[in-house]
Image (cartoon, rainbow, N blue to C red; front, side, top):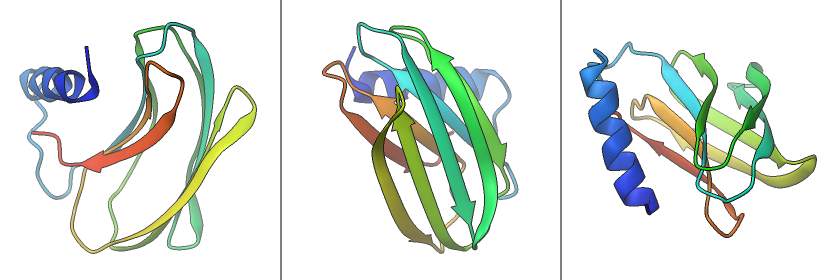
Amino acid sequence: MNRRQYLAVLTSILSLAGCTGRPGDPITMLAVNQDDASHTVTVWTIQREKLAVANTVDVASKKTAQIGQMTWKSGQYRVTVQLDGDVAFAREFQSDEWFNQLDVFIDSDGSVELNRGRAA
């Protein structure tokens, strides 16, 4: 299953679970592992210069684990991700438009991406 297929399935599951996807909903952070190996993912999310989420999860092969939740606020975000103890990336972005999904996506080759969007 590729990332787009996975996100489509995830969106449909979340909508069935009562997710309405509207402003005011919390940002849900997931670790999505499409790799054949399990991984330990650590995430620090800074929102407006304040720590909003700091958590470590173990995510099995082809599984998903919830990292945390936070309230959306316009402004600067900084996300740092460690994969198995090594820094995978540190990203900063400005958000002036509401979103409710911020996922760490581990691809089948072990590469790591940050996906941000609106769940249905």
